[in-house]
Length: 287
Image (cartoon, helix red, strand yellow):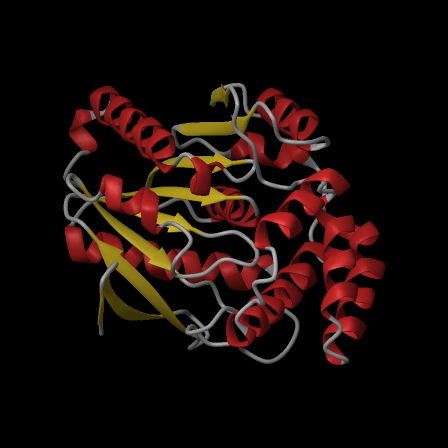
């Protein structure tokens, strides 16, 4: 399959789940993992800027079309297996270890992957994983969301998600105002809603202990926007303390939507980080 953004291919996960992965560029491989509500399009503006010297692999995560939507309750264990399958495909195709990058929920997933199965990874970069949104407190919000989803009640779904993400009311209102009278595409809205449901299932089954990430040994970059709302800043500071070997950068004037509002900044930061990793360990460059 071909698209203006790149070439799409299939990768099979360990349990047979079919993942659609968009590829663009050539060079050292980078796997870019999208957040909740995202998809194949989420990383394209960043990937296009990395494409001259990196091969970007952008999977649509399980639960998000056109990848498979498996039955049953999703867990991070399932998704780690998916990311590992994509990492292995990228490593096999290029003969090189992989830079893993995640944003929001995708950043939490990237942390899980680097913690449990780092074998094919060269580095890890995460932007604002919502590590506060996990465990028992998510369960009633998941139940509310599922009930709203089953009756196709978009406002009630949005209200439950706002409690999960803790996006300030002013930000929610600003998004609504910018949308104006434009109605969301019903197919895209449903695809996103299904994906959110599965993500909430995984979050409800996860924990909030940040010390577990101290076991990650690959070179790591923590990225944050200075204007993102609480409890993201507090969570990122705590994560930086739990991972003292990681680099922690904070972008002035940026928020949780930096991949949309400042893709060049994200791409340039990642490129510099990848170059630093290569300079520190040149012997690993073509393993």
